[in-house]
Length: 151
Image (cartoon, rainbow, N blue to C red; front, side, top):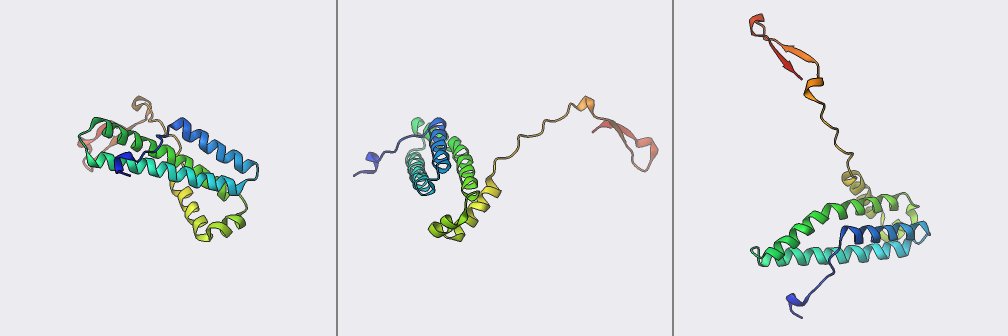
């Protein structure tokens, strides 16, 4: 098989959301093992696709289609990271004994670190209207050099 013949299905935000919903549904039904097996398969499929996209772009950076595919993959990365983080948080909310038996305590600690590090941030706080801020006076030790400014 030649490299050009290797293919992988292109995910979308919708297909990823559906796949992760199915994983959470499996966990709701008590299927920790099947959910984790499906998660591992999903992760491998995504990693394969992403790697192929980036490798193909590296082979020919002037190709517009390859550049667009790489940009799409790059844009999808944070979406995948959010799904991954939410799923790891969900796993960590379960009884740790079966997870530690399967993956070891170190894996759970890595998931905790991922959840702490990559948890989606709160939306940014909007900046207030500068006209609504109080006026303050900034003065140097010499009174003649005072200026009025908005903060």
